[in-house]
Amino acid sequence: MNGNRAEVTTGRSCEPSQWNTISGRSNGKKEEVKSFNVYLDDLQNKVFEAHRQLTEKDDPITAERLRDQFQGR
Image (cartoon, rainbow, N blue to C red):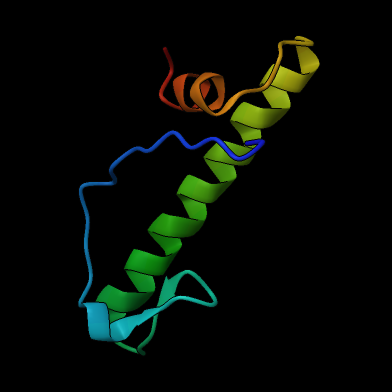
């Protein structure tokens, strides 16, 4: 947000050769790749929901506050 970053780890990984930097998803047709990408989609939706919750409360939105809301802190 506004040039600031706050990082979280997912605890999951994929082969670097399968990572598509443009889409931000793993390439492939195997079930484990599809499952991984669904997991990433779910995380993205949770971040959007955390942003919506902060917006509803009229809280200032910073990278750290968004991360904390996303993680339930």
